[in-house]
Length: 105
Image (tube, rainbow, N blue to C red; front, top):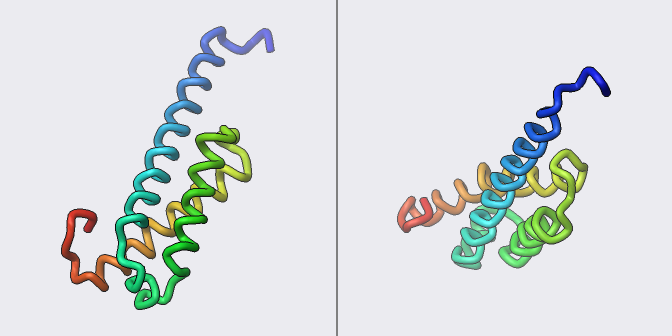
């Protein structure tokens, strides 16, 4: 470790904090979005029910923020994967069902 520059640990810490903050914000946005959606829209999309998504997204947020799992750990990866699936697939389906109206397009 003598060849490692002194600032290596500082740079690593900053990168991990940025990853943590981006992940936490994405999970919070997904959770709040799910919270304000109509319950019946989830059945039309053919997805998990609203309460199921709230549990998954809330668990993801819990893992990231409360437990403070490592930014490269398997739990963090699973939490981010569930959040990304909701935002990239389910949210778009919900938007199509509602006709694209509303603040959360």
